[in-house]
Amino acid sequence: MKLQSYINENEVCNEINDYLNYFDEPFWRKHTVCYDFCMDKDDIVCGKAYEKVKRNVIIALNICTFRREECIRKNLDLLMQSKFFNPDEADYYSRLHVFITDNAGQLKEEQNKFIHIYHNPMGNTGGSGGFQYGLDKIFDSDIAFTNVVFMDDDVEFIMETFYRLFALLSYMRDDYLDNPIAGRMFRKDRPYIQYTAAEKWNKGEISHIGYQLDMRDAANFISMNENNESEYGGWWFCCYAIKFVKENKIMPFFLHCDDVEYGLRNGKPPILLNGIQVWHETFEYRLKPIVLYYDTRNSYFVNEKYNLLDYKSILSQWKEGISKFHKNKQWLEEYMMIIALRDFCRGIKWLYSIDSSEYHDKICRIKTTRWKNAFTWRVVEFYFSLKFLK
Image (cartoon, rainbow, N blue to C red; front, side, top):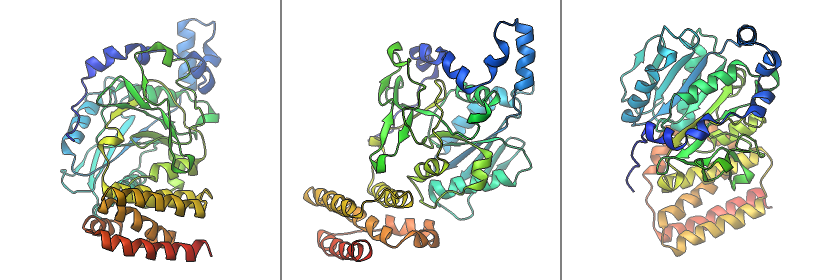
């Protein structure tokens, strides 16, 4: 399936202009201090009050990339043309710094005042390892960052996302400083459709909040900033307080479920605000056997950590899954699901002990047959039952 084309910013903004400009007064009253000082006051008095309560916000944008130079350059160009890089924009200048970890080692390394591009010395450690290396570099800097944004390397955005995030953080009430701020995902193929606002884990049966909403329709604005029991924001775009990320390292999942586990560990419901969003390929464009391996294995680890596993149900569901692939003669998909359970049985200490880059390469080289699968799944079932069901 071919990649979707870049969105046209002007066309998109025209189509969802009402959504972008919708002012959710109850949201701003609840989450910020602005209204505490500015009701029934003239503009000058209100402006002075704003300055007194405004927080000193500095954002680190953390991006992990692998062989997507075109996307990175396009997004860097957009960022560098923004107010955050313009000395004449005193309120914004120097308030956003970009840290990019290149797991492929192909981008030219760069260190200037606001842009930092590094090759990952550990090689391709996946999104988990790349994001963690980016965090380490952020912590090593002498800049007093207040927040970190995790963002995928292949998203598209408009700068209003960052301006609105900056405004929200600048006037946030103390009660919400530790809450993540989740960026919505809009579809690239139909850029007026919100794919999701935030996520509910539901033991791996993920529920998308505000799923597939047409944001040209004003009827969808009414409750769009309500949390609706969401538990985490995906790392296509999600903002965390610096205090939390300093105290919490990312689990070495390589890819997928790292954002889930991080959000569950944070434990605070993500904040949602219209205008903070990116455009991203939806998951039907990204299905591969190797992704099935990581989705399956990492989901088990997440559910185990948070006491959400029913081991009998897991085994039953796993057998149903591999049977489906077997009937469709999808031997590699079947084998990936088989070894996902095998590797989960090896335990969390094993996960932390392996070289994730080398192990990923090993998994990618796997070839299998129906006969190999038929033997292996029985061994894995026996191992699982012995460890968890005895």
